[in-house]
Image (tube, rainbow, N blue to C red; front, side):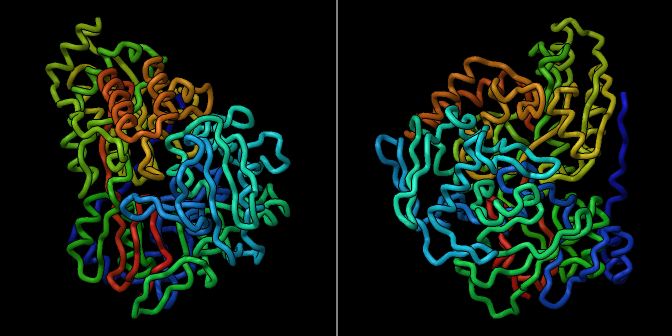
Length: 548
């Protein structure tokens, strides 16, 4: 098997961080990020684990792209930090009409795209037609790693006649009406995601094939330049429609996002003065920075969820006894405590910890190696077996140290007779190969785009999501009862009925263990203490209130 092994480098001790504090700008060269901007004046330099992939909102699926899209584009609705739905480009959150089959949005007036063209009802209709209609002349683009409008397909059931949205109609210069084929409970929360950011029709029509790297929205920041793999620069949109909190400090007008794959190198660049903030840091580095004068660490809510997917198309993972044995063989409390840091907890339910319908009564599978051995014997594998364990070589918000977690799990599995070879790839290749089901056990996860529960449950556990390529159901789990419950939940608007349906799905998945939940994660962000106004939101970081 062709694979590579990577090293995440040494961990910083508190003493190491303090020593680095005097090292100065030379650390930028050590980090290898290639950024020329230095954290000073009115520039906010943000070190991240990897670069964006595509900035076409509906054609990106990774968290680093989503973070940038969140700054450049506005959707019709948005999330408050606590998950409450708020209006954005719409004037208000609409009420359902016609038994939940119709919604009318009154739109903000006097809003303009970054290219100066007006935002209006025509722009909303154009964007939704582009996403929904497979034959639309601009149903394309997204760059070399385009998702091919996968978000729309997964969230609304497909394109054209398969789409839950039957049509979007202009009913006034600043008013649109959505007609649905059937009631759709998650409709409004879905529209609050940044993937539904409204783009300039003029910019798309001018060059749809390159829109992914030249995005034009209405958001608080506009793209100034993007040197792929090196730095991405945003400038403040002074005519943004939103309200920025008042602050006595000097506003930061430029944001530079620069990729530095290694966590320790990112922290070194922060302490050395080359960065204003960093994300994707391991718990030990976050703890050290909390104790270091001049720095602060803030936590996102529990918006990230990590898990191990066991490929049920492969032996011996077709057998639920084997999957349960693995669940009891892994010391998750120790792994989460050591590798995931403050605010993280061992996950019980197979869903985001912050989701509105996560069932907290579901407890994690207890660490019990002896039970694991008995289950293996019952499955006809008393001497264990050999397998592969795939891990993510790039730090993610839900998995800050994939190699460290994989090595700990490898030792746990060996203790019950399972020999696991560790396998990794560069992130894009990892995603591609797991989407084709080439793994045995693979770690994965995600950052939620809201509090709704339908999308992640369908994305990870619906039979229809287990496709031959680009599968989001990485366990390739098939359960007709789960599919039926999801179908019922989709057309249910009654909150308590939704709660009951989602709870039943979570219990079934927990009992059959196609995935082993690892952690509900609160990702840390470390900043220079002089930075004010940095906001962590359920959807992504908010940068529009930054001052120094």
